[in-house]
View (cartoon, rainbow, N blue to C red):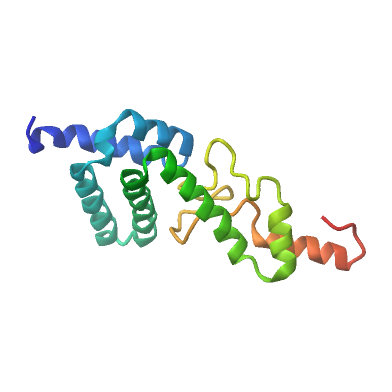
Length: 163
């Protein structure tokens, strides 16, 4: 099959890939079931898609897709399993490092799931947007937002019980 004959199949696969970005467990299964996702032709298609997003003024979405392109590069280098482990580790550490001050860092570590991404891989960048995730590609979403730690500090300062 020639490259031009494969293109419609790869475009359909890209649509499926983009629709599963918010569900890391499904995304992982999709990558494992379709090794062509890790090929050069799929990567070229992703580069073209990112360029199209940037041309349309969708820089945040383009950056998010670039993060998933990085994940695919890591899948090629480390294997799918290793890449997902690495992505989750970066997500967990990124949330800790972004926390402001020792109180927020401690609150982050005490948050349910902190340092222990669930089996769905929720620590990966979240493509959904809204309260459960962000459309910005500025990095993974920590298990507990920093403003929750600020609220808890405020409650303790008013005499409430700590977290």
